[in-house]
Length: 405
Ligand code: HEC
Ligand code: HEC
Image (cartoon, helix red, strand yellow):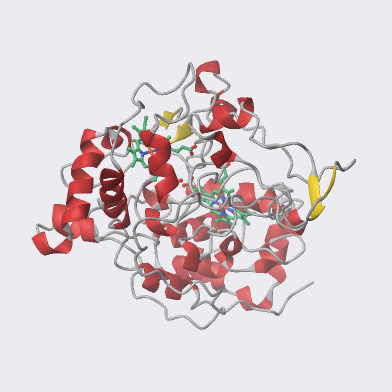
């Protein structure tokens, strides 16, 4: 295990609290065509005619919906508008979509961990929101289970959107002229603690993405849909034990067992000093100082599932993420410490981070470079068929500039 992979970026720009380490070797396989990374302008996208999603896409079950919040077009349209609205943060600068960027897999590709309001440090990588409606547990530690309730964490946390109270958010929306009548049309009542969560959750549940080359081959029976390398990669995915946690069922694949495992990243973060961390800052070639103030990012104290349960055995366990659209959602792991899929595969091949609590399913694999490339081809074949459409659908919303206080 090369701990240097977990190395911190010592001199991040003062604005960015974390950064992605440069990959040790270039990514092996060419990534699949990704939608444009350029940040599209609000109001320019094409609204997808996908909502509400009631039919199971190839490779996924029918999306679950809570009985007390059945989806409707009005709710989804309102939720989309809220998701992209920067007025939902205390200083009116930060929207949900700025940490969950549609063109970057509904996460952020450029930073290990996102930057909150006024440049504040956020300790975990932003999960992708594709297929989030299928998740039983939310957040890397599973501390929330309802999308409706989840929204209040980013809205109120002082290092994310930093609103001072629920009432403050409600008042923002109640007085914004461009929201006039929208909540009433969707819910029969105005903005409130429930309806704001229900609208955002309805939009998030529409972010369903499957129908990948793998799905067309495995569930659709189309032999041509998947190349030979990716097929070999899928065999390895099973034989190397990946599918024990990233599960594939008979008629669908969530690629997650919905459980929490210790893969050693949390342990390594807490217990192993990153290589080369001398505390020195390089000002110019040959000029180094040990500053009296620290420019490195605040230390993340992250105990994983323990933070949600308080049980000692849950320390450093994290929720198994889905692998759908995984080629689009770098960097990886709860702290964003692995910059690309090749690094993730090297990590598993070396047996993760050996320590007492390491999940017994993780052992050194001894895969050859060619086998690792095959596995990567398989992972790259998990990209859904509607990525571009979901990104454009997001940008179809107009964000009002009116009502700014
Ligand atoms: C400052 C960046 C930031 C903003 C703004 C933000 N998020 Fe997140 N989001 C994160 C991070 C980081 C996590 C993971 C936190 C954790 O696991 O403790 C997360 C987790 C989530 C999850 C759980 C996903 C999963 O698979 O577990 C959902 C859903 C979500 N955010 C939706 C939203 C919504 C809706 C908004 C706007 C109201 C929002 N986020 C605003 C960074 C952000
Ligand atoms: C013991 C259960 C387990 C096994 C076996 C396992 N994983 Fe994972 N995997 C996890 C967990 C848990 C995480 C999240 C770790 C974290 O956030 O720190 C993860 C993360 C990942 C990620 C990063 C996902 C993201 O969005 O950041 C990829 C890619 C991945 N695993 C692929 C694989 C492959 C390929 C194999 C087989 C070689 C494998 N996993 C074996 C549990 C497992």
